[in-house]
Length: 113
Image (cartoon, rainbow, N blue to C red; front, side, top):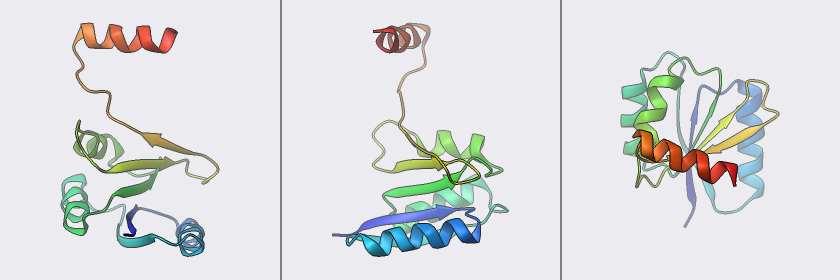
């Protein structure tokens, strides 16, 4: 089964690089994309309709702060890759869960170890 990939606000060159990388690796399909002008709510609806498993976007995406809490929910099967605007680095983001003071202390304690 192919991994379903959704692209958000990718510059043309970056889209072509990702398409080439996906084409070289069997098992991946780009199933959709969204523009920078689309609202975070509309993007999430589109992602859900495509059943994307991986969402790739850049740090330049205008609605990044609105989109992240909608995608990074505990139990979500969507993997989120955020690339720097120049495409040199990417980060795999995951939800950390509860944000109570106790939960945050536990997260910080885990990082400090």
